[in-house]
Length: 313
Image 1 (spheres, rainbow, N blue to C red):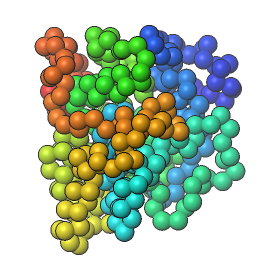
Image 2 (image 1 turned 90 degrees about the vertical axis):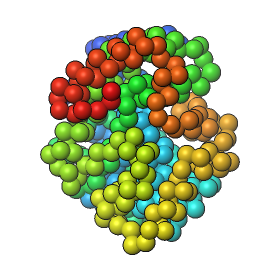
Image 3 (image 1 turned 60 degrees about the horizontal axis):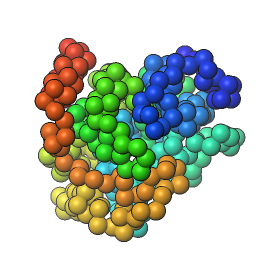
Image 4 (image 1 turned 30 degrees about the vertical axis):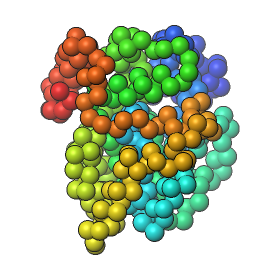
């Protein structure tokens, strides 16, 4: 595995480089996956220094697959007496990203393994592909991982809308489809990202729970119960499940002032309200041409269906 032990600016010349969007910095290929330079150091810090506790919960995902929503659900399931925190705190503040928030600075104090207090169950998120973790970090830990995936066409559609909110030059949808299909987007390729976590969920189901956005959307109550059981905190009362489903719904979350805020976050150059859009299913049909859909479906058939994962078409 490649190392980033030298300063990031010194090693990028040795990494494959591609433009994924004319208005943004290029992405660099590191161990088979593509990263923006601004994310690469945080990824390195996590891979080299993060030592999860056995009681930790890691929410893993490819960007724009339902991360924000699942953060609110996981936080509420684990901290049932504190679920009201969602009213005044953005989900990304309650469940911080390892590489984008906690380990983003070039120099992180790694004298201890705990960047945040270790009281109770710590919940973190990451977009880092499972293939990049070594046997001395998340792979060997007894921590729990919940991975969420989403239909590739809706994933790309949501990602395209998200990028468009940056206020810079529009990212043409035709270019977005090309880059997504080629795997050249931040944290891509999407298909390899998904299959890495799926493989681990099949081999170690007690460690990794693989969740689809579609199942979470169409049967949220059953999904919440399953999450509670997987995390070791099952529900005793049906009302508890219903309360969490209601308080964590996209419609409810979008009403909170903190989530409607146009203030920029401290870790990414986008406002808090950019993390909430439609949250539905099949919205890609309103934007993508039949030819675009056919192209993505062909790759999905090859990457997913031929590997035994019948999903995404």
